[in-house]
Image (cartoon, rainbow, N blue to C red; front, side, top):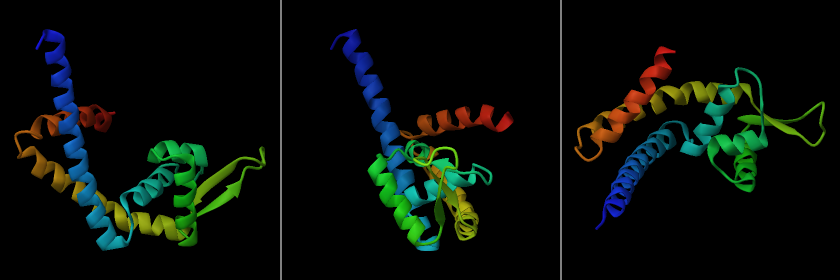
Length: 152
């Protein structure tokens, strides 16, 4: 293997480690949120994204970006959450083609109930992962990234 091949392998190993940590986090969050508040991780992500709007709303395409879903998958997800009365769609007053999505009171209440479960699960999984030598460097990198955000 040449130097370039070694560099590619190092990056590939890093990516595999990050993917392993992501999978571990997502599966534990899925289990905890589903059992406690009947939400999937992606449903929680939608509620979280809308809650961060501080009473405002998001266009469907913004929501698709926030959830990393295709527009059609986002529409299906919004339909499910709307059927559960957790959010509502509103036509844009300026552009009748634009559709906004907003949390309902029930959606905000469920989010407030789910958030501590999400945060405690994430904290626990990251602590467990930090004890694993192969995952510890990625967890430490996440903590290093979060420190400037928390301080700002």
